[in-house]
Image (cartoon, rainbow, N blue to C red; front, side, top):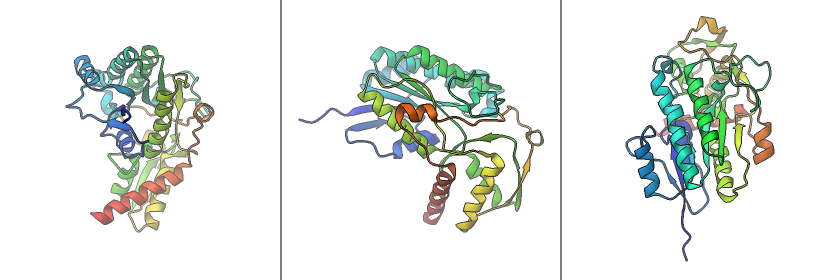
Length: 301
């Protein structure tokens, strides 16, 4: 007798985390579904309903998001539609179907003024539209489906899509020196490792209706400024024969952007370690793996 597949919906499948979720190794019998925006419109209740009527999902991982932080300042409605409206629709339908929902969120829900590591119970106070829209999504998920986990992360990096690491390597190909902000501190985090944490969480939630719920943080271990991260990227790239540049650290005031960034994005991992047994590796090892993958891609090109 054949077992019925366990269907898991992954939204945002074309993003950094969504791509890594699809590349991860899942147990036999798990069927991943990562519809395109044409196949699933998360701003449309009818589109969401139609997909759930078609496939008996066992769980949902929502990694879809409006991530254009600066653009969100001018396009408030679009940011809230994606980052709050979509999660609200998913919370409603997953609650109705009695299945868990895992929502990916961000350090931008904090103002960055705390001197130490942020824990999940710290007061939230976003300083921009992106952070406010993601906080609204968190609230929609937590209030809309009691069987939900919100996983906040930060400074996401991978060999795919646009991110800080790839931008640094692109700029270093043409410039011998770069000025990089040195007064914002956070935890560089691999999208591969985020996907690994999401996999552990969602599989446990499917198997155990009493699995822990609530808000959690996941980042790679350690901390850095953006300038520190750039220096490590260039060190590793140079060792592999790739582009590198000298890095001059500068204050945020010398690199103005439409949206303010939190000065402190460091997140505590203690709660996730206690409840789910997840212990991340150091960010330097994660960055090294990304550099290796990019070099492998270049060798194949």
